[in-house]
Image (cartoon, rainbow, N blue to C red; front, side, top):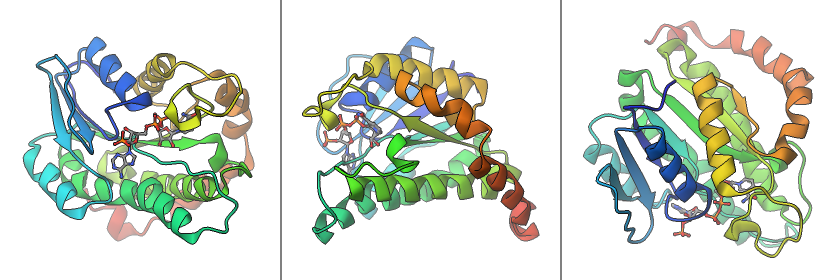
Length: 242
Ligand SMILES: NC(=O)c1ccc[n+]([C@@H]2O[C@H](COP(=O)([O-])OP(=O)(O)OC[C@H]3O[C@@H](n4cnc5c(N)ncnc54)[C@H](OP(=O)(O)O)[C@@H]3O)[C@@H](O)[C@H]2O)c1
């Protein structure tokens, strides 16, 4: 899908990768960028519309979906990562609420618009979805579940002309991993690669050097083979719902 002239909603758009995606979408000629944020946001470009959107807030999700008339691309970028050791259930629930259920609730709310435009859903996942990082196991669980959900959405929505992309991110230089002393890619470079992957139609997008190192293995691997085989089990009533 070409980004030029498209309408795009990005959650968590006030900082980090989300903010870089807003700039990259504008550079590629997007017609309108809805920038979802929990607080106020000022971006001096008439093509950007700030949108109050806490992805755990049902009323805000409903209002956002009512306020937007058309949508081509939904980017589920908002996320939280909490350092834990699986002893704090509240922390695990908080991460599931944003990283898993927030993505699903926002996606469901905007599905009617995406069906109409035959648009795309882009879910921001992590290398920690493929193998858990033991310093953030609750986060890893939430991203693994969100990857699995993304694969189901891809199978369930394919017949309705909606593309579903999984972005498998490695370390990016944002607030999220500020205290983690490892090589990190710039958010601007990641944003550029994410839109390249979207425009190329890549099911999985590996937008940074760390994630690119596993791309070939993922694409040729058993999990991908099984995903394709299992996609045949989409119920006919769903497959024909276009
Ligand atoms: N940075 C990395 O190394 C890395 C690696 C793998 C995956 N990712 C994923 O990439 C995405 C963006 O991460 P980032 O590095 O840009 O993180 P970040 O700099 O910490 O920014 C997180 C963004 O998510 C927003 N957010 C958090 N909870 C929200 C909620 N309930 N509703 C709406 N927005 C919410 C934040 O808004 P506030 O400013 O209001 O808190 C902020 O805009 C996340 O899904 C993350 O898991 C990042």
